[in-house]
Length: 455
Image 1 (cartoon, rainbow, N blue to C red):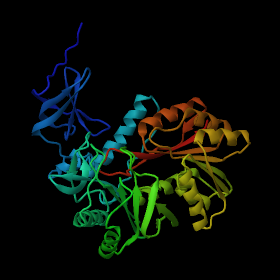
Image 2 (image 1 turned 90 degrees about the horizontal axis):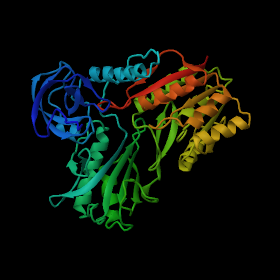
Image 3 (image 1 turned 90 degrees about the vertical axis):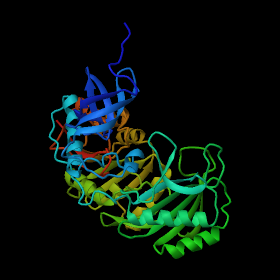
Image 4 (image 1 turned 180 degrees about the vertical axis):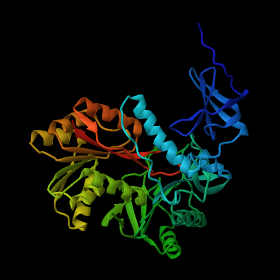
């Protein structure tokens, strides 16, 4: 028997929004059939048009609000929703913090794991926090523009104020864009893989205020480069580094392999947890330093270090956690698969005169097994994995070395729940409440710190 959906594309319906998905979309149901509706909040009564029908769900858009949520924020800029820059901007900030907490509660309840989850730690100013921007450059209606892609497409929406970025970065992008226009440089055409300027990337130190401008080009030759550099440095005195990165490939990967430093240094510096870090165009460095400090401080407190412990920091990146932990531990071992990141980590250890940290280039799960075979006995393992979470081999090897505590910094609650289940199956339990931290206000991303101890 063929199933027929109870809704039809392009038809309008009236319904009550019952929930908010992890992606921040409202959920209405008709005959138990879910319709995901952008810009709709729980408890709102809306008239919506169906835009797409799949086998077990549909998508819709709001045509009219009959009843609005008291948590709704009016007068939002639709471009931030269209581009996915701020998908939760229509929800009050207190509502966003509750949404992130409740998402985690729901995921752990679904998995039948009994844990306490604290209220989400938010920001006093939940916008203008990003210290890095990667802005595509395209031609629209005969003019070179900067902005962001409409969600799910490569159609550029021109934007000058990006809302969640450091305003000094927004200002720098407009200045560079205007100069690129003035010197008649061609915008990249991704359909034909022609043109020159693909992306403008800007990094700015939150504490140091040092600024780096990276102009990503398809071609090796950047005409008028000396004049462009002179004009940028005159307009932006904070700039300490101007780099041309060459990426000739028609790919979604932002940076190519060739960097040409046209002004200043190949790196800028910033401070985190009282330490100085060197940041290159390619460095992975947390984009919200204020909340990162809260997150790391929390992780260090939860590790309960006395100064005598051996700590393993898996997925260590450029060494931010390892080096912050170093003064609280006897020795720290960091592992990361990206060799350039380990190069940065070693440089940062030298920069801060820290000599009780050892960094290794390897897959975290492979190195964990090696350390286990070599008889290394860590007291604490700290993990800060990517969104896909931990590999099962890593969990296996980590459990075998039997640390007193595992401190798990997560950026994806779904994979956190899965990994907690794996640790529980190996004799660990969650110790104390889980603490969500809002690293990315106005978006659906959720960071958290969880502690696991042996039963």
